[in-house]
Length: 354
Ligand code: NAD
Ligand code: TYD
Image (tube, rainbow, N blue to C red; front, side, top):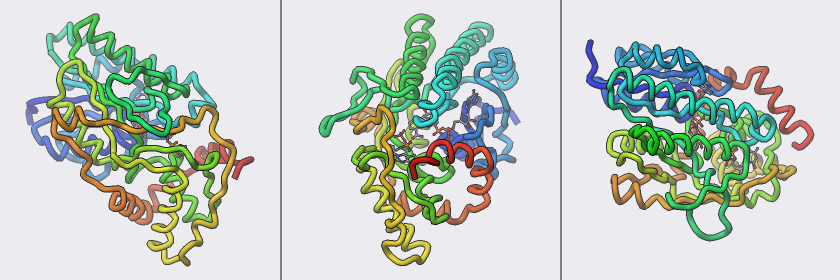
């Protein structure tokens, strides 16, 4: 079968990447969707079993730092565009091991850009590079205000510093080499398939196992939450209709204090598992705060709304219910990802806190 368009999605075996791949594979049967992923601890092909046999999907294992391999894959599939999600993505891990974030997020993105630049020159294919980034590059907000696309960068963690750096490289390739690019900076995602080191799946998993719920500091930090399928929809739209060289902020319009979110989740878990109301909440423990913990993130997403007509479709209540249902129905997935290395990570991160 011949395809009209081919997209390389990096990090497609991860949380957001797998939802992006599923959406593209199912929406565009005429496109070839190639998933390029190193399968680190965060990458899991079990996320894609429902689409893995479709003719317009292929998986290639590899490192974005491996320019020779990346170039051979770009040629093999005659790739027209890249959607780049591969990254080290967890703030707490970046505090423990910042250099691995520099390697993957900074050097990896620069290597991928360089491989794509060379491939475009060799083939004359005028493909675009879409870089998926985070609102954390803007730093933290006080109790008021929102991040817009023109908010100055002010990253405060090794994770956000590495993502900020990668954003700059992408823009530099546009300015210097004329590469067609587009970027988006999104707030906190939640939903099925998220690795249980991030707040919501970690709390779900701990409640199920009767373990304490480690809330950092006083739980007063605020995040804006977006259901992952809404992010995938925005990425699809921006890839196709985003203006060249532009950045789009993506947000969920759902600002929550961590402690309020955790309490809401406790109630949902009590209801869905038939436990006594209030029993999950008893597991909450306030633990030592994260170093350099950003106080608040909030997104002004009027640009993508006005230009491209995107708004979040899933309200937090139904998104959270869908998320909890997914984790309760997917014990094997959770067991698979919470193996030995997860337990080691958990012990190191929380052993002396929770
Ligand atoms: P994730 O950690 O779940 O997945 C990352 C994927 O990248 C994994 O499949 C991993 O195997 C792969 N990967 C890591 N290093 C690689 C390498 N060197 N070469 C190839 N593949 C590699 O991350 P996620 O939460 O799905 O985030 C995806 C992207 O979206 C990231 O760029 C992240 O910065 C961004 N983002 C995430 C959020 C969020 O809330 N999770 C919000 C905004 C932006
Ligand atoms: P996280 O899911 O790690 O995302 P990010 O740091 O990128 O926002 O954390 C979300 C919020 O929850 C953040 O303010 C830190 C807090 N948090 C806890 O209180 N306890 C935890 O065990 C974790 C993982 C996070």
